[in-house]
Length: 209
Image 1 (cartoon, rainbow, N blue to C red):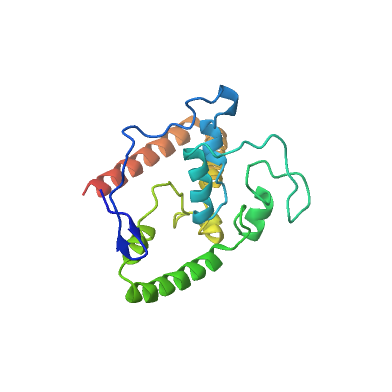
Image 2: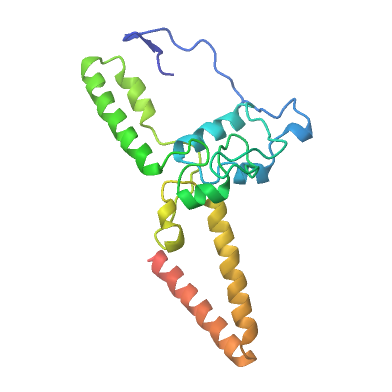
């Protein structure tokens, strides 16, 4: 157990630690619990910092479900369907900004770098704050789905959580592939499926090597 640091001086050890993880849904009725579907979409098109804030609320029972649509700050229409979001998904995707804080990810990165430089200067002045700064630099335990390099359509949304958009994109591509296969003759369809299966096996073999 780490000692608690206060005013640069090591304090006493932690007096008590829970043996079991806190369960926010233990005494909540079913209608007030956060469903798996809500957890999947609640951080859609949010920056990394806002994703951590919203997911922290879920972990500790502070998340409040939104009962009706709210007005978007950009288009002024009642299209905001997710709690703690300030703009709708269409505006967030069009402007490439966070749906909660309405900031561009590039601005947040520059602010984080400036904060890091300030932290370095503070670290040189006081050794007591160094442990706290190292804790801040630890990687987050929450999942954040970043845009992959092969997703060219979503490259401008880099820095935002694009899990929902990637799922929609995969479904659309699967539907297009099914429509394309439906227009082919039986022999052409079998040949194409065989080539796709062979290509997938080759890629798996390369990854194993």
